[in-house]
Image (cartoon, rainbow, N blue to C red):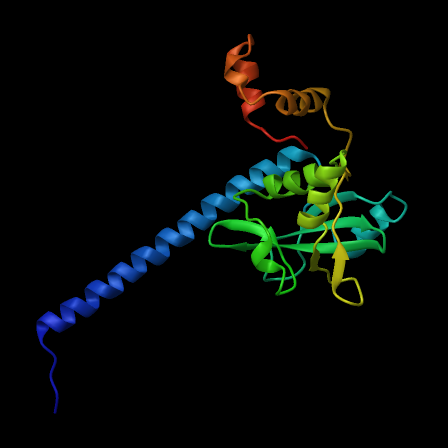
Length: 210
């Protein structure tokens, strides 16, 4: 017969309580991060929600290389997917979420080299900026950083060259939104602009360049 001291029992219960609190805090943090990511995505105009892979393929079928949209992933382990037109045709690039960060899913050797972001829109913005690089030095950097072999569930060898240049909008975006993007490309100091506070609030509600 064995017995356990009350002190040991209290220690075990304390450890369990701490673990439960840590798990609860992690879940709450994830929910908050994902909620903000969803809010930003819905403001973009190029987030298509529960669009299927086949529907995305039809939309992109006659588009130029680099045309893209973001939709909900049809795979349970992923939240979002980028559907894009590549040199090999329409393909789907999964977005991985882990520990409060979003990054492109990738083949094992490339995965550690890919940047992580707290926002899906920031992730897309990063690769759009690299893809749009015009000068040779920037283009070479883009080729090294953005044209990586990322996981693709629609290519025979599992890899595809990433190029994102032009989003497909669900509807014609409002002129105010296009102006907001143009202003964001020119300055990060919105609060210093000679504008009414209401307009400043609108500008800071979406701070991205795409």
